[in-house]
Length: 312
Figure 1: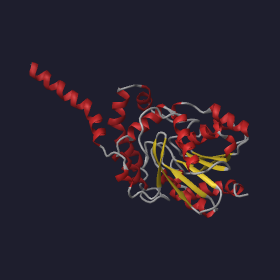
Figure 2: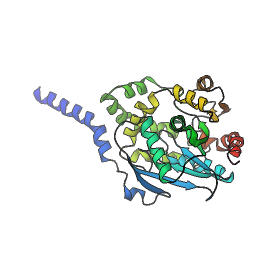
Figure 3: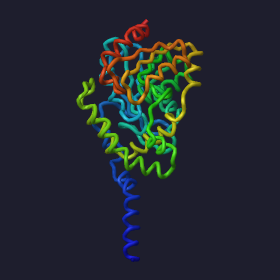
Figure 4: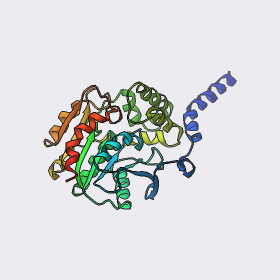
Protein backbone atom coordinates (compact mmCIF):
# COMPACT_ATOMS: atom_id res chain seq x y z
CA UNK A 1 0.00 0.00 0.00
CA UNK A 2 2.84 2.39 0.86
CA UNK A 3 4.46 1.57 -2.48
CA UNK A 4 1.18 2.27 -4.29
CA UNK A 5 0.74 5.69 -2.73
CA UNK A 6 4.38 6.43 -3.32
CA UNK A 7 3.90 5.75 -7.04
CA UNK A 8 0.74 7.89 -7.07
CA UNK A 9 2.62 10.79 -5.49
CA UNK A 10 5.45 10.46 -8.00
CA UNK A 11 3.02 10.44 -10.92
CA UNK A 12 1.18 13.46 -9.54
CA UNK A 13 4.48 15.24 -9.02
CA UNK A 14 5.50 14.56 -12.61
CA UNK A 15 2.15 15.83 -13.88
CA UNK A 16 2.51 19.01 -11.86
CA UNK A 17 6.10 19.55 -12.97
CA UNK A 18 5.58 18.66 -16.64
CA UNK A 19 4.32 22.05 -17.96
CA UNK A 20 7.08 23.94 -16.14
CA UNK A 21 9.72 21.47 -17.32
CA UNK A 22 8.49 21.71 -20.91
CA UNK A 23 8.71 25.51 -20.75
CA UNK A 24 12.33 25.30 -19.55
CA UNK A 25 13.20 22.99 -22.46
CA UNK A 26 12.00 25.40 -25.14
CA UNK A 27 14.40 27.37 -27.33
CA UNK A 28 15.67 30.63 -25.84
CA UNK A 29 15.43 33.69 -28.07
CA UNK A 30 19.02 34.80 -28.68
CA UNK A 31 21.38 36.08 -31.36
CA UNK A 32 21.42 32.69 -33.07
CA UNK A 33 17.64 32.73 -33.46
CA UNK A 34 17.82 36.31 -34.73
CA UNK A 35 20.53 35.77 -37.35
CA UNK A 36 18.03 35.41 -40.20
CA UNK A 37 15.64 38.11 -38.99
CA UNK A 38 14.93 40.62 -41.77
CA UNK A 39 15.10 43.69 -39.54
CA UNK A 40 17.39 44.96 -36.79
CA UNK A 41 17.64 44.86 -33.01
CA UNK A 42 18.46 47.42 -30.35
CA UNK A 43 19.15 46.91 -26.66
CA UNK A 44 16.77 49.01 -24.56
CA UNK A 45 16.46 49.28 -20.79
CA UNK A 46 14.28 46.16 -20.51
CA UNK A 47 16.06 44.04 -23.12
CA UNK A 48 16.62 43.53 -26.83
CA UNK A 49 13.86 44.82 -29.11
CA UNK A 50 13.51 43.74 -32.72
CA UNK A 51 12.29 46.34 -35.22
CA UNK A 52 12.15 47.06 -38.93
CA UNK A 53 11.48 50.03 -41.21
CA UNK A 54 9.27 49.37 -44.23
CA UNK A 55 8.22 51.57 -47.13
CA UNK A 56 9.97 54.62 -48.60
CA UNK A 57 13.11 56.18 -47.14
CA UNK A 58 11.34 59.52 -46.63
CA UNK A 59 7.80 60.37 -45.66
CA UNK A 60 5.54 60.72 -42.63
CA UNK A 61 6.02 58.05 -39.99
CA UNK A 62 3.43 55.40 -39.14
CA UNK A 63 4.27 53.31 -36.06
CA UNK A 64 2.43 50.00 -35.89
CA UNK A 65 1.93 48.11 -32.61
CA UNK A 66 0.89 44.45 -32.79
CA UNK A 67 -1.29 42.46 -30.42
CA UNK A 68 -1.14 39.81 -27.71
CA UNK A 69 0.12 36.74 -29.60
CA UNK A 70 1.00 37.71 -33.18
CA UNK A 71 4.29 39.59 -33.56
CA UNK A 72 5.18 42.39 -35.97
CA UNK A 73 4.81 40.23 -39.09
CA UNK A 74 1.07 40.79 -38.69
CA UNK A 75 1.66 44.21 -40.32
CA UNK A 76 3.38 43.02 -43.50
CA UNK A 77 0.20 43.14 -45.56
CA UNK A 78 -0.94 46.48 -44.15
CA UNK A 79 2.54 47.94 -44.64
CA UNK A 80 2.34 47.52 -48.41
CA UNK A 81 -0.76 49.71 -48.52
CA UNK A 82 0.73 52.26 -46.13
CA UNK A 83 3.90 52.43 -48.24
CA UNK A 84 1.87 53.11 -51.40
CA UNK A 85 0.39 56.11 -49.59
CA UNK A 86 3.90 57.40 -48.92
CA UNK A 87 4.35 56.40 -45.29
CA UNK A 88 7.52 55.15 -43.62
CA UNK A 89 6.41 52.29 -41.40
CA UNK A 90 8.08 51.30 -38.15
CA UNK A 91 7.13 47.85 -36.87
CA UNK A 92 8.58 46.12 -33.82
CA UNK A 93 8.12 43.06 -31.63
CA UNK A 94 6.74 43.59 -28.15
CA UNK A 95 8.74 42.02 -25.36
CA UNK A 96 7.94 38.33 -25.06
CA UNK A 97 7.10 37.96 -28.75
CA UNK A 98 8.87 37.48 -32.04
CA UNK A 99 12.58 38.31 -32.02
CA UNK A 100 12.47 40.51 -28.90
CA UNK A 101 13.69 39.48 -25.44
CA UNK A 102 11.47 37.86 -22.82
CA UNK A 103 12.04 39.89 -19.64
CA UNK A 104 10.22 38.58 -16.59
CA UNK A 105 7.79 40.62 -14.52
CA UNK A 106 4.54 42.53 -14.95
CA UNK A 107 3.50 43.63 -18.43
CA UNK A 108 1.38 46.65 -17.61
CA UNK A 109 0.87 49.90 -19.51
CA UNK A 110 4.08 51.45 -18.21
CA UNK A 111 6.07 48.40 -19.34
CA UNK A 112 4.91 48.67 -22.95
CA UNK A 113 4.88 52.47 -23.11
CA UNK A 114 8.49 52.47 -21.94
CA UNK A 115 9.50 50.04 -24.69
CA UNK A 116 7.83 52.17 -27.37
CA UNK A 117 9.20 55.44 -25.97
CA UNK A 118 12.75 54.12 -25.88
CA UNK A 119 12.53 52.67 -29.39
CA UNK A 120 11.26 55.97 -30.81
CA UNK A 121 14.04 57.84 -29.04
CA UNK A 122 16.64 55.43 -30.39
CA UNK A 123 15.29 55.84 -33.93
CA UNK A 124 15.05 59.61 -33.70
CA UNK A 125 11.26 59.69 -34.11
CA UNK A 126 10.02 62.72 -32.18
CA UNK A 127 6.49 63.77 -33.08
CA UNK A 128 3.85 64.04 -35.84
CA UNK A 129 3.40 60.26 -35.55
CA UNK A 130 0.54 58.28 -37.00
CA UNK A 131 0.17 55.58 -34.34
CA UNK A 132 -1.66 52.39 -35.34
CA UNK A 133 -2.50 49.72 -32.78
CA UNK A 134 -4.10 46.32 -33.33
CA UNK A 135 -5.81 44.34 -30.53
CA UNK A 136 -3.57 44.64 -27.44
CA UNK A 137 -1.47 47.00 -29.53
CA UNK A 138 -4.51 49.28 -29.55
CA UNK A 139 -4.39 49.43 -25.75
CA UNK A 140 -0.66 50.19 -25.89
CA UNK A 141 -1.21 52.87 -28.54
CA UNK A 142 -4.00 54.45 -26.49
CA UNK A 143 -1.83 54.45 -23.35
CA UNK A 144 1.05 56.06 -25.24
CA UNK A 145 -1.22 58.68 -26.81
CA UNK A 146 -2.81 59.56 -23.48
CA UNK A 147 0.68 60.05 -22.05
CA UNK A 148 2.20 61.86 -25.05
CA UNK A 149 -0.68 63.48 -26.98
CA UNK A 150 1.52 66.20 -28.42
CA UNK A 151 3.58 63.63 -30.31
CA UNK A 152 0.64 61.99 -32.08
CA UNK A 153 -0.84 63.35 -35.29
CA UNK A 154 -3.55 60.71 -35.42
CA UNK A 155 -4.43 57.48 -33.61
CA UNK A 156 -5.81 54.50 -35.50
CA UNK A 157 -7.17 51.57 -33.51
CA UNK A 158 -7.98 48.21 -35.12
CA UNK A 159 -10.09 45.89 -32.93
CA UNK A 160 -8.44 47.49 -29.89
CA UNK A 161 -8.28 45.95 -26.45
CA UNK A 162 -8.83 48.00 -23.33
CA UNK A 163 -12.48 48.80 -24.00
CA UNK A 164 -14.40 45.51 -23.91
CA UNK A 165 -13.41 41.87 -24.27
CA UNK A 166 -15.01 38.43 -24.37
CA UNK A 167 -13.47 36.17 -21.70
CA UNK A 168 -14.38 32.66 -20.67
CA UNK A 169 -14.39 31.45 -17.08
CA UNK A 170 -11.13 29.54 -17.55
CA UNK A 171 -9.36 32.63 -18.88
CA UNK A 172 -10.57 34.73 -15.96
CA UNK A 173 -9.53 32.05 -13.47
CA UNK A 174 -6.04 31.72 -14.97
CA UNK A 175 -5.53 35.48 -14.99
CA UNK A 176 -6.64 35.91 -11.38
CA UNK A 177 -5.07 32.86 -9.73
CA UNK A 178 -1.36 32.68 -8.78
CA UNK A 179 0.61 29.43 -9.25
CA UNK A 180 -2.38 27.34 -10.34
CA UNK A 181 -3.00 29.92 -13.05
CA UNK A 182 0.59 29.59 -14.25
CA UNK A 183 0.27 25.81 -14.38
CA UNK A 184 -3.00 25.92 -16.26
CA UNK A 185 -1.63 28.50 -18.70
CA UNK A 186 1.44 26.45 -19.51
CA UNK A 187 -0.60 23.25 -19.72
CA UNK A 188 -3.52 24.51 -21.82
CA UNK A 189 -2.51 27.58 -23.83
CA UNK A 190 -0.32 25.84 -26.46
CA UNK A 191 -3.24 23.60 -27.43
CA UNK A 192 -5.75 26.44 -27.38
CA UNK A 193 -3.45 28.69 -29.42
CA UNK A 194 -2.92 26.04 -32.09
CA UNK A 195 -6.63 25.33 -32.24
CA UNK A 196 -7.61 28.99 -32.41
CA UNK A 197 -5.10 29.97 -35.07
CA UNK A 198 -5.74 26.78 -37.02
CA UNK A 199 -9.34 27.85 -37.60
CA UNK A 200 -8.03 30.68 -39.80
CA UNK A 201 -6.17 28.46 -42.27
CA UNK A 202 -9.00 28.68 -44.78
CA UNK A 203 -9.33 32.44 -44.52
CA UNK A 204 -7.59 34.81 -46.93
CA UNK A 205 -4.51 36.50 -45.52
CA UNK A 206 -2.26 39.31 -46.69
CA UNK A 207 0.53 37.75 -44.60
CA UNK A 208 1.95 34.59 -46.14
CA UNK A 209 1.83 31.48 -43.91
CA UNK A 210 0.54 33.54 -41.00
CA UNK A 211 -0.91 30.56 -39.13
CA UNK A 212 2.39 28.67 -39.21
CA UNK A 213 4.20 31.82 -38.08
CA UNK A 214 1.74 32.35 -35.24
CA UNK A 215 2.09 28.77 -34.04
CA UNK A 216 5.90 28.87 -34.29
CA UNK A 217 5.91 31.34 -31.37
CA UNK A 218 5.18 28.36 -29.12
CA UNK A 219 8.69 27.02 -29.78
CA UNK A 220 10.29 29.79 -27.78
CA UNK A 221 10.75 30.02 -24.03
CA UNK A 222 8.93 32.92 -22.42
CA UNK A 223 6.17 33.38 -24.98
CA UNK A 224 3.34 31.77 -22.99
CA UNK A 225 4.39 33.43 -19.69
CA UNK A 226 4.48 36.79 -21.52
CA UNK A 227 0.93 36.27 -22.74
CA UNK A 228 -0.17 35.54 -19.17
CA UNK A 229 1.62 38.61 -17.79
CA UNK A 230 -0.15 40.78 -20.38
CA UNK A 231 -3.49 39.23 -19.44
CA UNK A 232 -2.78 40.13 -15.82
CA UNK A 233 -1.33 43.51 -16.71
CA UNK A 234 -2.37 45.83 -19.50
CA UNK A 235 -5.39 43.73 -20.52
CA UNK A 236 -6.81 43.63 -16.99
CA UNK A 237 -7.49 47.36 -16.71
CA UNK A 238 -10.22 49.19 -18.70
CA UNK A 239 -8.87 52.31 -20.41
CA UNK A 240 -11.70 54.75 -19.79
CA UNK A 241 -9.38 57.36 -18.30
CA UNK A 242 -6.97 57.07 -21.21
CA UNK A 243 -9.64 57.47 -23.87
CA UNK A 244 -11.24 60.40 -22.08
CA UNK A 245 -7.80 62.02 -21.88
CA UNK A 246 -7.28 61.45 -25.61
CA UNK A 247 -10.64 63.08 -26.28
CA UNK A 248 -9.65 66.05 -24.17
CA UNK A 249 -6.32 66.38 -26.00
CA UNK A 250 -8.01 66.64 -29.38
CA UNK A 251 -5.97 63.86 -31.05
CA UNK A 252 -8.04 62.50 -33.99
CA UNK A 253 -9.07 58.87 -33.44
CA UNK A 254 -10.28 56.28 -35.95
CA UNK A 255 -11.42 52.89 -34.66
CA UNK A 256 -12.05 49.95 -37.02
CA UNK A 257 -13.91 46.86 -35.83
CA UNK A 258 -14.80 43.42 -37.18
CA UNK A 259 -18.52 42.71 -37.05
CA UNK A 260 -17.94 39.02 -36.29
CA UNK A 261 -15.08 39.51 -33.82
CA UNK A 262 -15.24 36.84 -31.10
CA UNK A 263 -12.52 38.52 -28.99
CA UNK A 264 -13.56 42.18 -28.93
CA UNK A 265 -17.39 42.48 -28.92
CA UNK A 266 -19.20 45.24 -30.81
CA UNK A 267 -20.46 46.69 -27.55
CA UNK A 268 -17.01 48.29 -27.46
CA UNK A 269 -18.20 50.66 -30.20
CA UNK A 270 -20.78 52.21 -27.90
CA UNK A 271 -18.41 52.30 -24.97
CA UNK A 272 -15.70 54.12 -26.97
CA UNK A 273 -18.33 56.57 -28.24
CA UNK A 274 -19.21 57.32 -24.61
CA UNK A 275 -15.56 57.89 -23.69
CA UNK A 276 -14.61 59.83 -26.84
CA UNK A 277 -17.58 61.22 -28.77
CA UNK A 278 -15.26 62.60 -31.46
CA UNK A 279 -13.81 59.20 -32.36
CA UNK A 280 -14.73 58.07 -35.86
CA UNK A 281 -15.75 54.41 -35.88
CA UNK A 282 -16.23 51.96 -38.76
CA UNK A 283 -17.28 48.29 -38.80
CA UNK A 284 -16.05 45.76 -41.40
CA UNK A 285 -18.72 43.21 -42.30
CA UNK A 286 -17.89 39.49 -42.26
CA UNK A 287 -14.61 40.19 -40.44
CA UNK A 288 -13.39 38.61 -37.22
CA UNK A 289 -10.58 39.57 -34.90
CA UNK A 290 -7.91 38.97 -37.54
CA UNK A 291 -9.21 41.69 -39.85
CA UNK A 292 -5.76 43.32 -40.02
CA UNK A 293 -4.60 40.45 -42.25
CA UNK A 294 -7.86 38.81 -43.37
CA UNK A 295 -9.55 42.05 -44.53
CA UNK A 296 -6.51 44.21 -45.18
CA UNK A 297 -7.90 46.05 -48.22
CA UNK A 298 -11.18 46.86 -46.46
CA UNK A 299 -9.32 48.24 -43.45
CA UNK A 300 -6.97 50.27 -45.65
CA UNK A 301 -9.90 51.69 -47.60
CA UNK A 302 -11.45 52.91 -44.35
CA UNK A 303 -8.12 54.36 -43.24
CA UNK A 304 -7.22 56.11 -46.50
CA UNK A 305 -8.94 59.45 -45.86
CA UNK A 306 -7.35 59.72 -42.43
CA UNK A 307 -3.97 58.63 -43.74
CA UNK A 308 -4.05 61.15 -46.57
CA UNK A 309 -4.63 63.87 -43.99
CA UNK A 310 -1.38 62.77 -42.42
CA UNK A 311 0.44 63.57 -45.65
CA UNK A 312 -0.51 67.25 -45.52
